[in-house]
Image 1 (cartoon, rainbow, N blue to C red):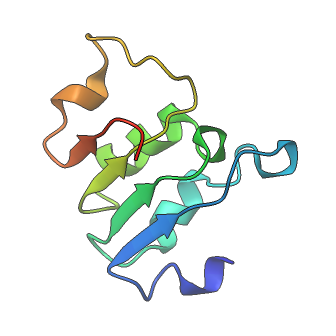
Image 2: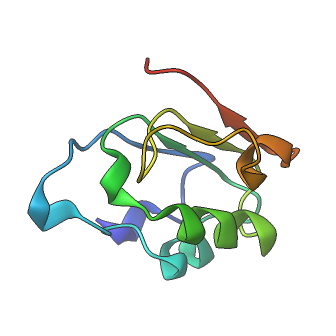
Image 3: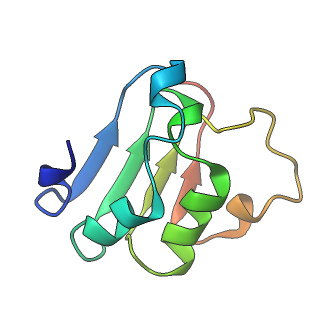
Length: 93
């Protein structure tokens, strides 16, 4: 699974939420990604904790983040994700 993280310009996660996939994506996965590579999660929100996603962005481990689902749905207006230049938050695709 992690072998291809350093090869793609955009890594797209489309795995649905299941207990065995909870917290599947870790900060080390962002480190494995191609420098300034993009990350998109359109599968299950529980694949990556919001703080792990933020860590990947803040450490400049990825170029752009596209987030369709979150660990906890209902992103607050004050959440940092809204203010990050390289993160795009969308409604459910």
